[in-house]
Length: 119
Ligand SMILES: [Cu+2]
Image 1 (spheres, protein in one colour):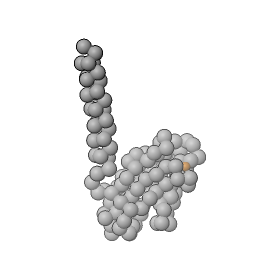
Image 2 (cartoon, helix red, strand yellow; image 1 turned 45 degrees about the horizontal axis):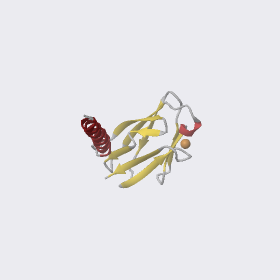
Image 3 (tube, protein in one colour; image 1 turned 30 degrees about the vertical axis):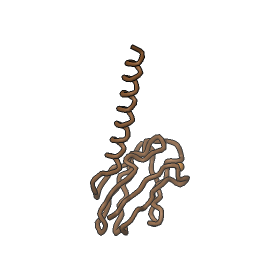
Image 4 (cartoon, protein in one colour; image 1 turned 135 degrees about the horizontal axis):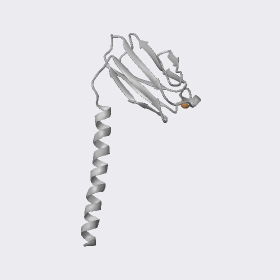
């Protein structure tokens, strides 16, 4: 009987791991978009990666829900673009002619981390 209980527990654990892995994968393999809303909360950008096409303008809406000063600025590394985000508001940023490649965007202390993939 205890063997059966252990087995059921093991299967449940495997299911949870599998579910997390799958949902994470789905998040990283999203379609390209030219407009997205990014929630800034609990130390993470959601979604943390944005996939876009090069040669088109890209509009990003940052919905800052985290009042800590850590979240107040978003900086696009290497793109010479940054913005101040007001708590409880959505700040819209438009990027034009972003070169193809992976561009990191972070807060000023680089606690918040995101990736913009342009292809
Ligand atoms: Cu920060």
